[in-house]
Length: 227
Image 1: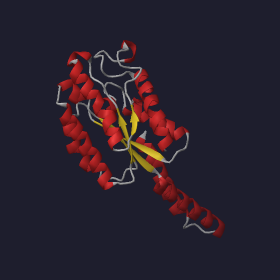
Image 2: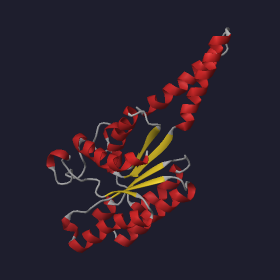
Image 3: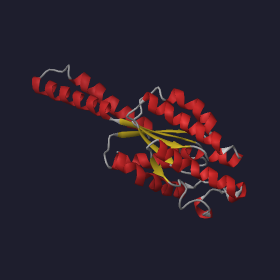
Image 4: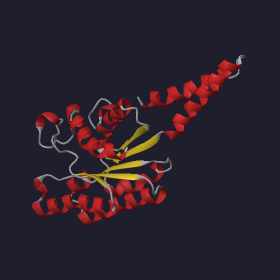
């Protein structure tokens, strides 16, 4: 899907250049205009980076295009909005690992950053202060390199068996970070999906295709005003 999205415009640009060498002033002028239009469209396309764990990666699905970032790309395409989505989800990622991985991803300019990390910290019982610091470090790296980048944070919760005090402290990380960094905020990424057996895979943690459609809707409501 993503290959076709970029290969086709580039192929069109190649043919536009080839046709410009053909005789006939009108045809040459048309091909030059097509070349300019194609180049302009490519230059104006903005990038949305979804940075997260297995939820972003679409663990257990047949392809990333079925995960919520891929579904959001389909929404964007249907509205002919000039954005492309990069799915940088990695299963098992913690906030500490994400802080190490984000650097090389920032080599490519991004215009909108969606941060979905923390769930694996919560499941491992990592101190909430450490999770908060790691997420803040990631945000700081993004804003330092791309000050105009728009930011979105997705909230997360932990299962009740992690303990009430830990669960409350963990849940409080996300709205606090969103407020501190002026980020658009999705209160709970898994709203409408968590605890619903028919919307989750056998592990009870990772959403099915239908579950991801709900996740996409949860994010889209917050994302659309930023586009």
